[in-house]
Length: 335
Image 1 (cartoon, rainbow, N blue to C red):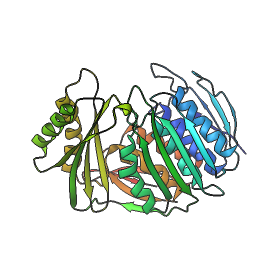
Image 2 (cartoon, rainbow, N blue to C red):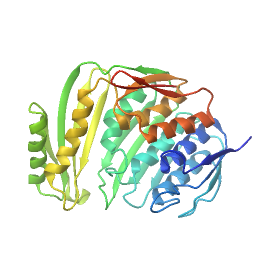
Image 3 (cartoon, rainbow, N blue to C red):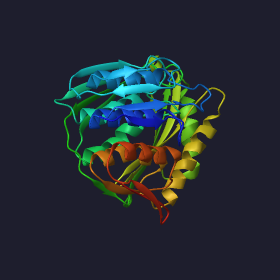
């Protein structure tokens, strides 16, 4: 079978190109070669979390791989058949569990039997979707499409220490298209401030800041075991009739709690002021499941470089011409 040639520096130019290619290669059986991986990043080439994703994909489908070394800017991946089973992968740092999980989950929908999957590392990392986003926003939509998947956040792992764990149970699934062009009425607006090994007052200040933007928000402090820290995050959950969105601010040393909360509030307020069904980050995460379902469409508040890059990679592996066009209050994404 002809090898697909990819430029790892195109579009968004980060690890998303590699992760999407791994997923699509496992499912379609098409090998790929990628060059210039993360070439424009300050630390180019493969980092620990990328190598974990490559190793996980290779184990699940028995792939032949060359170039899977730290700092490597090229990789050749020749997949075999996807196999169900019990898998466990460790990122080993605060590198994202969620990105590794999302790389292999869609492939396991196409496996020859059910699977369990455990990934350890970072669950709440500013450079990746947090585990709560995966569970509350992304998972309900792919389950609506027919994915037999459950995800459990076993232990939180904040940047930079990591140490978190996600577990998933997956059964072979046949996805159906999804049309998500309207979010429906607002059902609930909730906030949760997490602290682990951090004073509770930090979380209280974050919720007080959120109430300045959203006076009626239902907020709560959640104290995690100290062993899961140090770490802090504040999350705003906007539940609508047809979709739930989650917006997160990450605490860090030297950053005021009020600024952490205000950044999350600004993102949530921008989404709520518009009419599109999904926000920028959920749009990035939806296009691959839709492609695997054979089509679908949704409206999004923004068209990010992650989104257009993902669509470009999908176009190399699968038939059809995914596209984005302007729509009232945002963009219409069609696959």
